[in-house]
Image 1 (cartoon, rainbow, N blue to C red):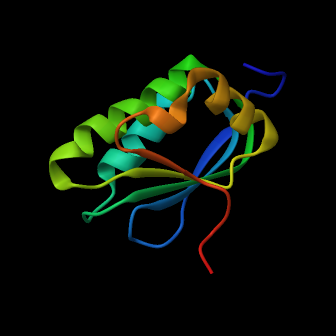
Image 2 (tube, rainbow, N blue to C red):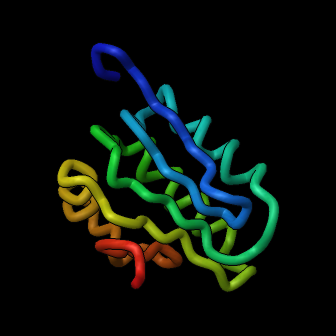
Length: 109
């Protein structure tokens, strides 16, 4: 975790849309899992990751786990507007090929 170790999950509305801010790592991954699991409704989970300053394998694992858990609902985990550091990490691990995970460069217009 970084110097300040900050991470925040901001719920954007009530439809499974969240903004992730700060460092998503082993210490903060459970907060993301809990927030998304507690969200009401069906359909895609949209995670705006434009403000992530760090993401490690624990964060990637949560993305995969959420997608796997949603597979029966024909829903996806959409990683929207990745920050440069998040984009690089997603590229390294091949996240675009993970079942149920989609990467969007920006919000649809």
